[in-house]
Image 1 (cartoon, rainbow, N blue to C red):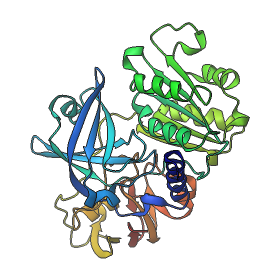
Image 2 (cartoon, rainbow, N blue to C red):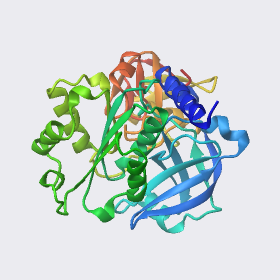
Image 3 (cartoon, rainbow, N blue to C red):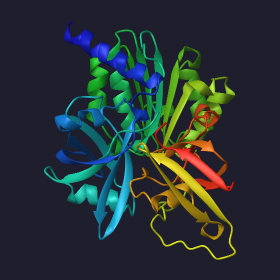
Image 4 (cartoon, rainbow, N blue to C red):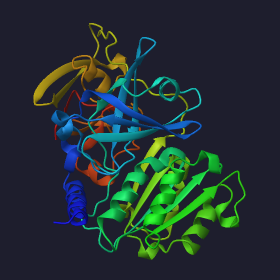
Length: 386
């Protein structure tokens, strides 16, 4: 088998795994990995590459479009942040791109203090922002991204284009200015490698471009023009949207309005647009009053069952309750965005406050975000292992 054929076969196998569940089905757990390289992407963004030892390779097999959670202890506080994997799956390494957030403790630390040779806790890859089709021959994929939303699309575009000589990828990527474009050279190299099959459109909101359509902020009018002029929606097999909530929601609404089936629209957020960073309250003391109503949360994680009582006055989520008896319960953002805390509701009922991560079909199959779910029945049973 030629190298090209072997590569295409691996891509097909990975995408097939995505269609039937793939690596997402394993239990999420942290391992300590060594930083192999820190590469500057822009003035406020870096690509961090971790070395994956042979004995952990199975734990870090992933699909293009998935993400990992990073865990560090800064100033005596544990911080977790979720970042998309920006390179196609490759044995021995995995890479994430970290963009500095204004006031962001973790992202600022990563920009200034993280160096090759350092170690960091990295969770096994999770997420379903992946291609549904395992056979990409003749398929046309479109990605619309803003800022650091390009990260998973770098992996997806490269995987799709290298997986078939007849696949196509169209990328609309918006930033404030050219200096803010992450992976600028990498995108140019990808365009040079696949000139006929990659359509690359940079939209700059604060910098004038030769084409007026590619200048200014993407609002509804501009998006509809882009769809009319640059993309023929009737030729697209799958859409990938990644960026802030406002842009992703705008794209979903317009695509639905022009008749695109929502089953063909994949989306991922890097922020909900809400201020602050959600933090679970796991581990805090909780004590029920003698006359207080208590609900029981039972859960299975890595084959082991546990139970915890949650008094009504605690107003806690299933994740917060579970963390009091199992500190290794998986979570990352705790804001309903990343989906790391996903579990299947086996018994009882819950009220889910927010959901930016689960697809409609996952909800139909009973999956919930435990960081956003509050028990409303006397007993709630969830399974993290399904």
